[in-house]
Image (cartoon, rainbow, N blue to C red; front, side, top):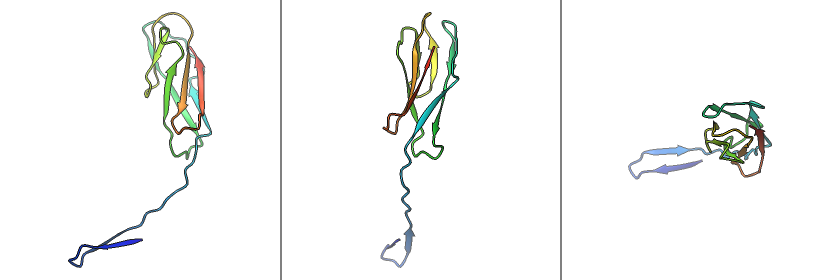
Amino acid sequence: MQTVTDGGGVRWACTVTVKSRVSVESVTVCPQTQMINVGESIYLSATVCPTNATTKSVTWCSSDESVATVGIYTGKVTAKKAGTTVITAVSVDGNGANDTRYF
């Protein structure tokens, strides 16, 4: 603990606790499968494990944006034309954990 004085006799202190970083082990996208019509949108969700992972955020991408786009941070999938694309959620903690779904 560090105690600091402002010269006028006033003191304040701060205790800092440093925790170990918990890496993401897996990412699961939900729903498992989904069919949507051209022009429609749905939101996908991603569950990160373990639940106490330090960084739980994911980024999203589509393998074929001419078929469907996905919001990089939102998981909102919008169908552009008939076809199939792979939607992937990747953990941003840098360990490469990801999950994919076909649409």
